[in-house]
Amino acid sequence: MTNIGIFGANGRMGRNLIQATVEDQKATLAAATVRSNSPFLNMDAGLVAGIGEVGVKTSSDLNLMAKTINVWIDFTLPEVLADNIDYCVEHNINMVIGVTGLSAELLEKMQQASKHIAIVFAANFSTGVNLLYKLLEVTSKTIGEDCDIEIIEGHHRYKKDAPSGTALALGQVIADALDRNLDEVAVYGREGDTGERDRKTIGFATVRAGDIVGEHTALFADIGERIEITHKASSRLTFAKGAVRAANWLSEKQNGLFDMQDVLGLKELNI
Image 1 (cartoon, rainbow, N blue to C red):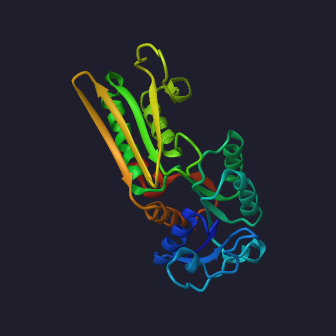
Image 2: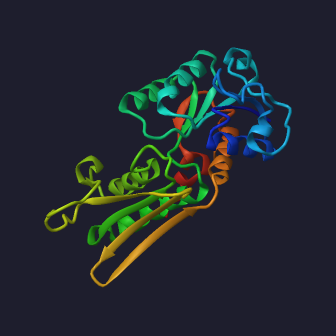
């Protein structure tokens, strides 16, 4: 069994991670953290998640939990991720990281930490989205040079970063397949007289509204036809289940930086 700790247990993803861990037959919820001033401190984690008591109380004292955890899952915020990485490296505990909107400095910190512990980092832990990455690679190599490519994504009103980490990951998959530098060809907004579209660009459009969990579409448009490949998530639980799956996969690893393509074995598929 994988003993899992969850950072930020009272957050939107934290609550789903609690449920996913409790429901997983290969995992055990061993710890759930909240801030020291949180009204959820010392509350049963199951009650925080709305699934009934599970026998694990939330805490803000990480040192009390270090010896009981195999893998920590972090879907918190960039501003606290650095401290969480330092803690896991200090105590030699592997991590699953789903925090998005990371700076170059945080990405480098993660890379350095992976020399000491094993980390699964992904912009999206959905099995469907990771299959989408593979489909986009095939589509890009087949028709990408002949098409205008746009990525449209939508999330709830509370999401702070844009475009989403998943949208950027989709763009990176496409750019890599077409041997383009995403930093050079990405277009993140259009307004006014922009001139004709550069055929090499990859456009991004962002929607923030209501309670949209996550919707992503990659559009390949030629003259006379277009292909739209879409993934829609209706529940955050799908991401949480993927993260717990990654934690189980990671529990026996010593060090290294991995993603969900590694966890799902999709890199081995030759399609």
